[in-house]
Length: 472
Image 1: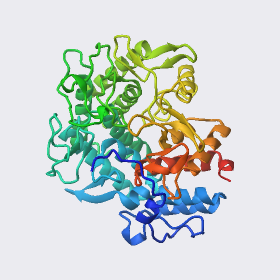
Image 2: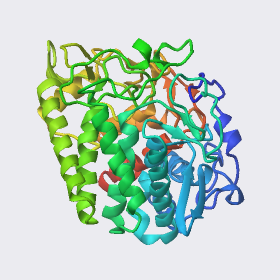
Image 3: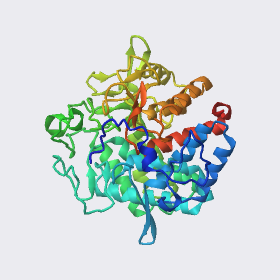
Image 4: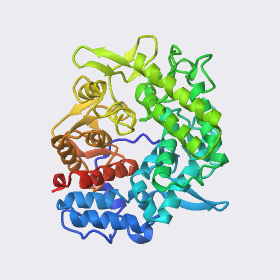
């Protein structure tokens, strides 16, 4: 089944799928038990249960407590296959509604657990297993976005005109697919100081990331990657024999697809290039910490600087209303796209990824633009306002964009606004979704979307720690 999903109008679908008793939340008439029963959970962590108990006992708003109880453990409950391979942790994380592991999603799905790794060795091993598995996947095919647990399985997309290998689910080249594993590894090291998993295999994967990024600067040719698909969805295929529209080599990295899995219009996807700068610097630091190849670390830093300078020179344009802002996509030839997409990385989420400061004047101007009618994918209705994208269609807001807005704000009124919209968005299911209609939260896509559940739990926990008064 293709990951793109049709709008679902069954408001209690998720509740039906995940019904069962919970240990940490007492049922009330308005908040039915929707978490999986303990016997059916894929992975258990005492520290995660302790965090849930703390949140649900301290937060006065019962609906927020219920949502955290459902969303925070959702990845562990539903998506984890944890084993070992040759004596090392090995973790497969499915995306929820597809039996495949995305490099991006799997990193983000476990992100909210990272602050608690020092308190739970089994949870620490689970994340280490994700890092180990991602390194294998990058070495298998750095241009692929998602993979099967079974390395011999053939994809439903086997007819795509690209170099599809057994075990690859989908081969959409997205810069962020290689950034997210670095982000995860770097934060894992920050939290644990454990470098034992940054072995020769992982180091080779990082060298492959560097090689792939350089190939996609397209300085001498179009590089080895091409992609075409026979489909009615125009955004699921690339023009010009699968290489996309031409770019002028200016130092930026081409991304064939956006993190929302729609084809780029202009291949220099600005948010993803910002993400690449951060990731290259993090990978270089890790190489030096573990005393790996210093030459490679220097090359990573040099590429990060080259991309950063190109962003400063080419990514900023003058908007007639908002002044200097970041374009969403450019081609280096003077053409650009003014918009933002809900998925992360997007322009709105740049500070969340550590790519720009929250007070950066160009970012603040960009923020005003993408949260206004000047962004063609900003929607406002009776129940919510936020960013969507072409992946689902008009008037469908992604909770991810509302969460990103809250995570990148210091204004309590704005944070509260985001929380209120999210509180109303679950469509009586107790979980977040990929998107929902701005006038009707029961009209949503993807009943099971662990990434956004983890992200929402991260937002709730951050608010609990920094602005607990907003959760009353």
